[in-house]
Image 1: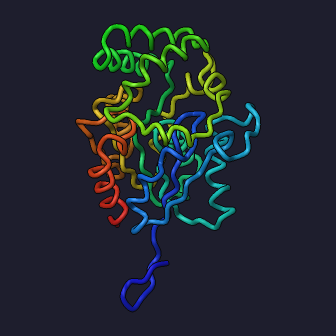
Image 2 (image 1 turned 180 degrees about the horizontal axis):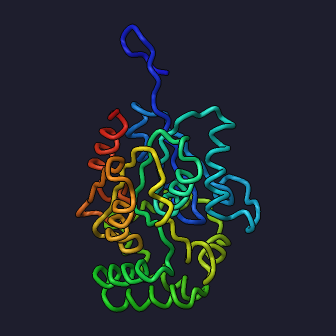
Image 3 (image 1 turned 60 degrees about the vertical axis):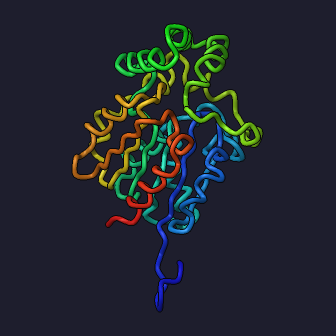
Amino acid sequence: MVPDGPRMKEKPTVLLLHGGPGLDHTSFKPAFSAISDIAQIIYLDQRGHGRSDRSSPEHWSLARWADDVRQFCDALGIERPVVFGTSFGGYVAMEYAIRHRDHPAKMILTSTSLRGTAIPERRRNVLNAFERIGGPEAREVIRRALDERTPQAFVEYLRVCGPLYTRSQPDPEALKRYIRNGEIVPYFERSDGEGAIFDLSDRIGGVSCPILLIGGELDPITPIAEQEVIANALPPHLVRFERFADCGHGIFRDNPERMFQVIREFLSSP
């Protein structure tokens, strides 16, 4: 509750779901303090990530992570949250909104996809996007990573393709704050893993809250074409789709001023 003249009013609660998998919430700090004046910001390390319990691989699934969001909110007494999901966090946010359709007040999705990296259409979009940004070498490296899914292929992918994710490179000091779990990506993105084969296309239309969808036109791993797929699958009256021409993966790194302005408008709208 915050003062509003002679009254007290309630701030919206924004629950942030980080990317990865295998990363943590620290990538959001300090950037998201930019909206702390209009929203209560909650940073969550998801099960198996960061400073949360590692649990075990049989619990590393979109359904479990989605149910964790609801149970986390219930434990803290958070009602009608605005759930923000970026990249992998967007996968979780969409699954949560499908499974608990009456719980979120609103949802914000950035740099994400509703289908896995082995789904042919997404695979083709990713290969083409990396080639546009990084040339034939990047396309071949990401092709090997998606086809072979071996530790060696992923290491080469991070070396060649990692720097192509965003226009603004991350702060080296910020990278040191991450607590990583290197076991999740090989499990989640194995050939028959959920990260490779999930597809929410037939279920996402059942969400019932307003959604702000934000995509970067220079994003190679969740290309703008993937954001278009999400927008087309959602009820038209619920979605606001914002494209960022100068941004890659993780809009708050490349154009935080405009992104936070758009989020402010969305949070304050009825």
